[in-house]
Image (spheres, rainbow over the protein chains, first blue to last red):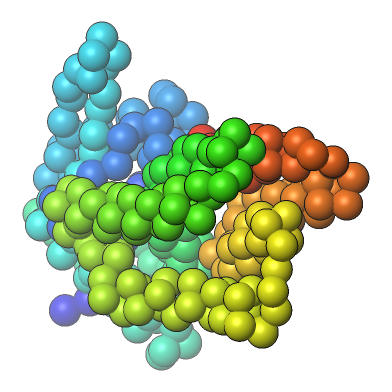
Length: 107
Length: 184
């Protein structure tokens, strides 16, 4: 059933999840690319990615490419499912045209 | 927590915008690799035409074969990495039809001089870039119009060094455009 996801609903986290969800499964985005796509700052993006990772919605992979550290963020299956439910909830609100009380974050 | 339909519409609009940016970024990424490849080949082709004009026909045929194979390999590499096929049989057919029409125009309908051929092909390709860019992204339009303008300047105002001019304008332009696109 469609439901509001408090974690995803925050504007920047919504943009992060939308960007990751637009990729094929198991494909991630580098931190710098994600920053550019979402228009976030370094600190802001890092904090929100941590929140999404704690909820199990994204996986963070840190590696070195040459001597440069590279962080890649990928949406997990749980994250994709939660995002799909959240989008369905948003569409439901528009279709019914009324305010809707969310059921909170699924665990 | 509750949200109203206006807030929901705004969130969905945000999502659409991000999805559009991601798609454009992926297209730019793949296109940039192809542009760098074709830029290097075009540079070699025009430099070859300048240095050995009599062998230009052979060298350009070889360049088209190498370029098509290279684009196919880039697509296969991208497919293996991202799971999405970008250069399939339909794309190959479109490319063959595009080139065949160009050959029909330049050899059958008209009998183009080497200088006219060297002008026609980049403009012909850049027309596709420009038109596609109207839907895909402004970078294609900028690169298409930029190379077309410089090509025409070369055609009308550059003398014997036209092929050398084109090596830098078409070859160098595609390489620079591809590198710029990777940063966009």
